[in-house]
Image (cartoon, rainbow, N blue to C red; front, side, top):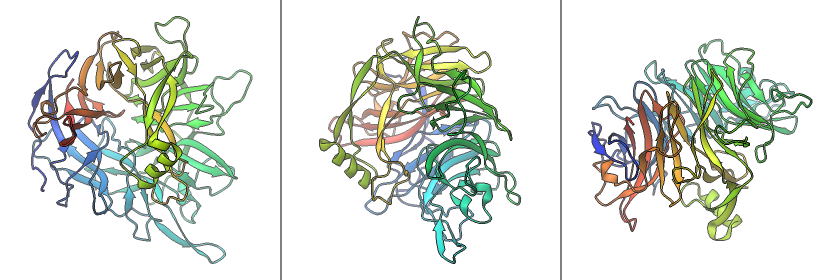
Amino acid sequence: MGSRPALAQDNPAASSSDAVKVLKWKTVVNIADSIPGTETPFSSFNQPSINNRGLVVFRGRSKGPSQPIRGIFVRDVTRSKAPITTIADTNTAVPAPNNTGASFNETPAFPRIPFGSDAVAFRGVSQPVYEYTLPDGTDTKIGTAGVYMVNIFQKKTLVTAASQLGVAPGFEYFEVPGASVPATKFDQFPGAPSPAYDKIVFKGNYTDNGVSKTGVYYRNIRNAKNPHAVVLIANSDTVIPNQSDTKITFGSTAPPSSYSLNMVFLGVDNEDAPTMGGIYLSKLVQQPKLITLVALGAPVPGIEGETINRLGEAISFNGRYIAFWGAWGTATQTVTLTCPTDGNADLIKYCNQQYPGGVTTVDEPANQGIFVTNIVTKKTKLVAMTGADNFADFLYWTYSGRPPGSSDTDDYEPPRWRSAAFAAGYGQKTAFKGTKADGTVGIYLATGAKPSLDAHQTIIDTTTDGTTIDPEAPSGVAVTAVGIERDGFRNGRLAINASMANADATLSWAGIYVAHP
């Protein structure tokens, strides 16, 4: 099956419930397209990112029975005949340093692209990329994970932005800054790195003198002949700002988001039960300082007597506004979680061993909302909340990690359930994923300086006819799942991924789509 030479034509699509206007969708890619350079069709897609020019970057994969192809791809949604282009896949060699000839095994997480640049950042895992001799004469191989970046219209050369090679001679610029032990290497790079022109911001985990630690960092990749070292922004030894009597440090940091020469991230004292911390801004300079944007304990706008006691890791940052998830109060609601059925076989098996029948339950905050903060005025507004406009939930759970004895995963942390919320902002518009009380899941839009909590535009939901989104979809399929990420709303264009199926699941479809809500 060959790739289509042109994008699907615009087609009108009205969402199925409370939409206020008809949307026209463009198909960026769907399962009728083949992975570039092959006759193998795509089978699924992660959430896409888009820049101001309409370049859409996404993670896609194929099915077996042979080893599936997985990778990062790009397409220009503004050009009707623009091809799908591979940035990196499982046939791509890891960029230097690589003296073993290793290729990528996986490109986990979603790729990211800045608002005003064509630079793409992503995370990659592989077999060890570097072999060298230890002082005692022993040969060793290291480097199975890294952060990578490419400007797709300037040289198109992949660059290793962060790596586990900081312990190897000659690669001191990759070592963990701020560690107590010299030449400490990063263990892993959780989440999705964020590009900022010739810089890249990322989260890194490491072991310092036997103690597991974490932090957020940036690195300038401009000068390959005289490489810049990694710069520390905040880590497990950083004192949380604005404390009076205590000196509590960050126990957890989340993957950051960048815009121009600024970045934002969530940092708290305890990931599972935070009591201190918040969302912080830092400039990408040699001696970064943290500016508090939203602190745990901040008032919930419009709800007297309530304060924010939980904050989400995923932060959408457009230079002026940040959009994020938060919760308040002590009320909880119980949700049912089902072990994954697709993906890593070891992880699926381990989940079912831990949860007989593949099902468990978890309690989560009942009072949740999507917030937007103006980073200049520091004013925060609540743009959506549970209990208003029939919303019941904004959290979505996945089971991920590395099962004991497994060697084919991208994460060294033990398997566990992780939750995430999804929002993307453009100007004073905020698109977000939500679940209604009747179980309908969709992407919704809050607009204006004073968005209504009782009325949101429905962009797409799980009652939407699939053919109104994608004219190539089989007749009779409806949307079954939707996705959006923090860099998916740029210059008025909203990029999403969607899966579709008919009632008995004998027909299925999937793709990535763009509209102007």
